[in-house]
Image (cartoon, rainbow, N blue to C red):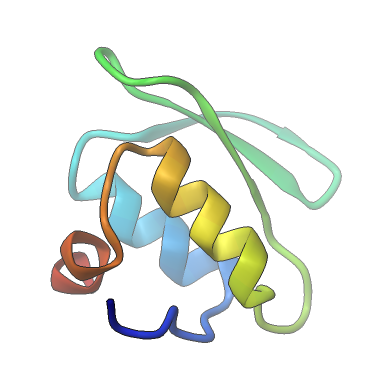
Length: 73
């Protein structure tokens, strides 16, 4: 398994948008994403990069592997 990249939240949202996730709500610095067939996700968008464990959880909740997510970048 390749290591989880260090990315800002905006990059993660753009990558998830390629597989059909759409932003439906923003509450402070957290963006809620919705997909017609998958579970909703919350992505933090702070001034810095996302912690690897947080990104790994988002990738897992989206039903992707790290390799599949890296292909979306």
